[in-house]
Length: 223
Ligand SMILES: Nc1ncnc2c1ncn2[C@@H]1O[C@H](COP(=O)(O)OP(=O)(O)OP(=O)(O)O)[C@@H](O)[C@H]1O
Image (cartoon, rainbow, N blue to C red; front, side, top):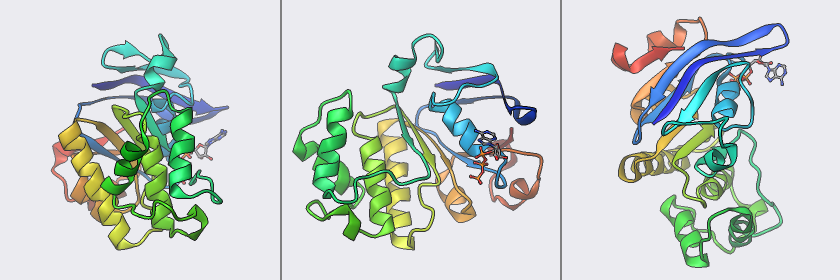
């Protein structure tokens, strides 16, 4: 269970998140929506431990973030908006490189399987020759090397074709349900939200998002 309590974040005098609280259970996929600048990436960064809230607490399975950040980080996979892979390396070389940085060991076959699970088959191809969708899948595969409990994704499907989008979506669904993971991700794609997410968190005052979602009221939460 991931619990946030009273989270507040200001940049200087600008208040971005104002006293927000929520709980997310294992197996849930949460969509995070809101207009540009509402604070989605800010919230994801706080949940990823890369940004400190001005006030409030976050705890994973009862363990407060501030108590042992290293241990919390081992349980988190974070994929920021920017694709961060080595363009000159092949998919295989990227996976092996990032495995060495990971705290959990995986052999080459396990790394390859991780890519195959999300339909990334071009193992020996240099990353620079791959499509945007393939690169996003690689970014995602890298974030899963250490088998994290919590997966935080900042617009994982932006700018990619429908097929790759579906493949990533199906993978996330399977991953959350069968492996009991907690997934929080931001997107501006309402079809995706309606199809994939158990619940939706709307950040900001604007009721627009709340009104266009085809989810029952109890599954749309205003933060
Ligand atoms: N380090 C920072 N210092 C000052 N202001 C910041 C900083 N990071 C973000 N902001 C501001 O905080 C607000 C929220 O930014 P954030 O990136 O969290 O929004 P977002 O909802 O993810 O936006 P988008 O949909 O465009 O990605 C924005 O107004 C942004 O300019």
